[in-house]
Amino acid sequence: MKVLYFAWLRERIGQPFDEVETQAVTVADLVAELAAREPRYAAAFADMSAVRVALDQELSDLEAPLAGVSEVAFFPPMTGG
Image 1 (tube, rainbow, N blue to C red):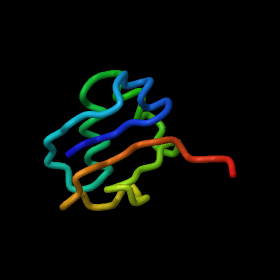
Image 2: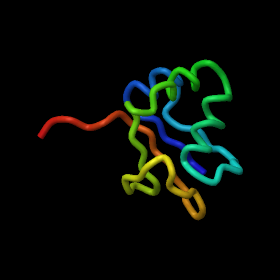
Image 3: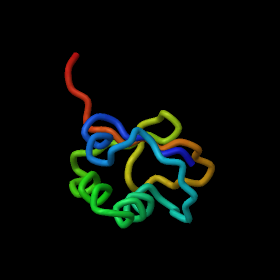
Image 4: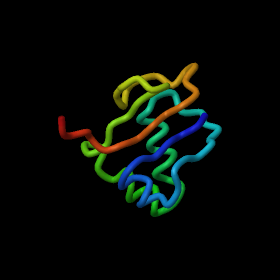
């Protein structure tokens, strides 16, 4: 599965994406796995109220299942018009 990071998440993690093999069932499980990797991931995912997620380019939430998903993107909330 490809995991993409945008904006300040990319800056904190230090790279734009990861290719991961995971046993995570939900987005929340994946976040927990990623945050446990090392401090830079923990810092990026410390405040999930400031992070949005898209599964295969569709906005989703932390409880969404990952079955069949090939791409997960994490990004800050969008603003502007």
